[in-house]
Amino acid sequence: MSKIVVIAGLAESLIRFRGELLDAMRANGHEVTAIAPEDDDSVRTRLAEKGIAYHVVPMARAGMNPFADLHYLLRLSRCLREIKPDVALAYTIKPVIYGLPAARLAGVKRRYALITGLGYAFTEVDASFSRRLLNRVASGLYRFGLLFANGLFFQNPDDRQLFKDQGLFKAAIPAWIVNGSGVDTDRFPVAPLPAQPIFLFVGRLLRDKGVIEYVEAARALKSTHPQVVFHLVGPLDSNPSGINASVVAGWEKEGIVQYHGAVSDVKPYLAACSVFVLPSYREGTPRSVLEAMSSGRAIITTDAPGCRETVQDGVNGILVRPGDSTDLAKAMARLADSSELREQMGRISRELAEQKYDVHRVNAAMIGAMELEN
Image 1 (spheres, rainbow, N blue to C red):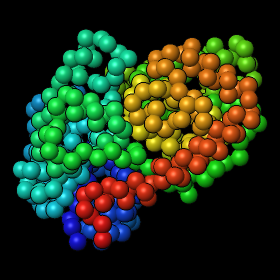
Image 2 (tube, one colour):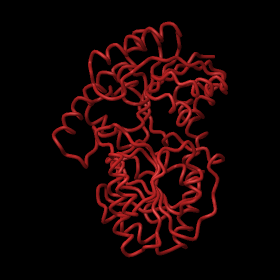
Image 3 (cartoon, rainbow, N blue to C red):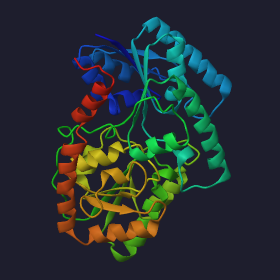
Image 4 (spheres, rainbow, N blue to C red):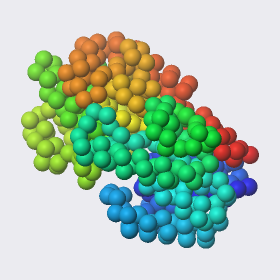
């Protein structure tokens, strides 16, 4: 039995994205502890039900204040010294950058990073000076943090190649590709397709998620297909690329989209839609798309890192150019015009979810790579 610590940047993600992985670690006989920045009673309770201890180490999610981040590293190291784990797994940018050196300082022998997506700093669609400067800073920080890694997990080959090309990790370190975070195909069963073409976007309301393109394409399609419905689900975000609440209210007033805000359960919305759309500029592997695939939905997403892996173009969905609302509107029109195509693509999406993205397969691959199988 090993003592494992999983370090997260957001408490809720421990349940939403890593819950099955934590369960798999426990099922293999290991003692598991989770660390995140928020003192979240709901998360603490749900982890306790899984037999997992929870520790809080505060962290500023936004910004790059070196003093605040150094404080996070030192507090994290103190916490790890108290826990005395054999293995540490960190995911999301700050836990990876600061969690791995903190684990090294605390004497943790085996340290792994899971790169779940690179975000705005690595978005190629935005060529602005601020984005390029942020990329340089983020790359340098990753290069530092990954000096202390014994192994890396990437969720798509593009991210691994980018890190390799920029020399962000040592060539001797194993770098595995896993099929995202996987999806629980039992929890997301196939739902009957509505006869009407209904499109759904689920995600944080960020420009680099393609929200603007989604709305622009919806506006264009509404002029020729007034019967089509567009739903928008997800929280507002304080990120620099976040969409302002007044802008979203304007879209609703215009009658383009129906906005539902943040929801705790996306299953009713997946069941009510006939096509799932994520025009993101870059992802790790989008869990929202995997859940839609498992639900038997046709997918429209971008030919961008992390997104393109989920769709066989013309088979279970359609790939469009990132940042191109006209291309997106054409793809939407194609699916709006054919219930047969929506049904056919949705059926194949489910098959791919079962064969490639089943969460138990994904977690077994990670546990095997870390030599944690019982």
